[in-house]
Image (cartoon, rainbow, N blue to C red):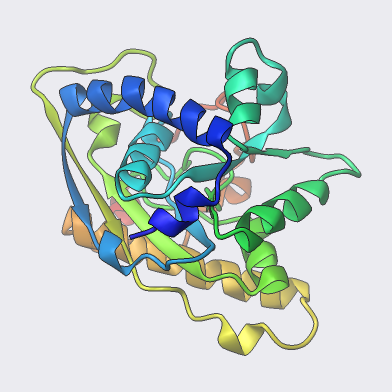
Length: 260
């Protein structure tokens, strides 16, 4: 599954991915046990993968799972990473997509992402834009970038959720908890139905509706993994005086209402 997509990639790109996989996959296998669900339902061609964001290590978890199922992941990543030593070279040579924040060139990232999708590739997006601010690690209110890309390109949107990796590296943690060995579950859901929103103008309300559907599906998948009932509404950082991006904030303590 997905081999035809990999064959479309350049030899250099495949070689760089192979070297990285040779380092990352053995390390991840040593650090965590894993269960992968639903990967046989992934579309053969290009698609947008929307994932919850609970810990700084979850891109490695997601990348490990995707690569092991024959797909090369491309993230929408902040452009500052592309100028950093070593990591910048890796980002450029694996075809990652830079995102310019608060810039007139921010739309360029959507153009670059469309090229990846048109070539049958996978674009991974964290709609939350940063690690969840929800005190109980539920997916929070999403940004509309993933919805905008989906409606502009017509590409399928596939929801994914993971759970357990936050025990290895807590949200905003700097030290891994290696023992006992942690187990991570990654699950893929069915494509999010946006057909009724693809026609007509992409107004703010349409983009928000699409975003809420995507976040709702991610939340439902995570609820299944956790065996818990999620909140009735998405956590909104703005309503709690939290910055939309960055890690310089004090997460509020859960209240009885938050747990319900």
